[in-house]
Image 1 (spheres, helix red, strand yellow):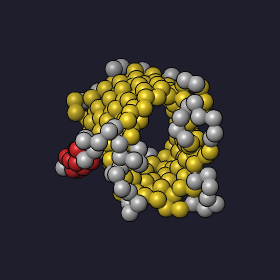
Image 2 (image 1 turned 120 degrees about the horizontal axis):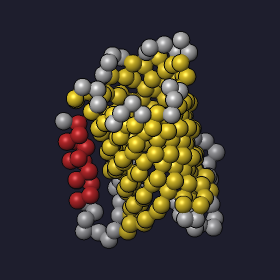
Image 3 (image 1 turned 135 degrees about the vertical axis):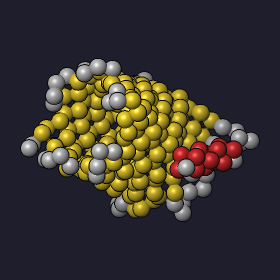
Amino acid sequence: MLRCYLVFILFLNLNSVVAQTKSVEHQDLLWTRYLVNFEVDEKWTPFLDVEERMYMFPFRQHQFLPSIGVNYQLNSGFSLTPALLYFEMITPQDPDAITKAIQREWRPQLALNFKHNITSTRLTFLSRFKSELRFKKRSTENNYRYRLLRLRMRMGLSYQINEKYTAKVLEEILINAGDQLVYNVFDQNRLSAEIAYQLSPKFKFITGYMYWFQQRASGVDFFSRDIIYFTLKHNLKLY
């Protein structure tokens, strides 16, 4: 039901700009990420997550996202994840820009995660609903100010090929909410496919492709991004 509502909101928002002149800018990005999990017991797993996002042509920084949080396993299907993310973005979002500034944010987040085995343990349905408050500080400001609430709904499938390899496909829709919004209630849509390789009991290497389509604040300008990403997951069992 929630997914139908998100798709309906997306349809209404895109339909409102269909008669206007739209501008779509294409960019190629490279994301690298390191995630370390500290398993303190069967239910509690604190984590540290650091991600660097780069433009590929030319090769320069786009965004930097470190975060800390904890995952709490409610039962075999559900888990809850509160986190705090720090965000930096080079503006304008143009890899060829000569004049640059940094936009900074703090984002308290809360996610509800769900997984369900469809066939034995190989094929698994995945979903995540996440809310995040965005406190922004622009380059011309001295303080962080609350700007908006963003809601994120992600669904996908995971397939365990064998003991070493796992494939995954995901789709995520992001929606903005707040008094300052004029056009971009729909924020972005992300489609991704990845494969994970279990290097050892402690380390997992993940690589994949993501298509990222994002509406800008004007409502008629969009980013269309092709992304290659690499993730190293590090699990530390402390009990």
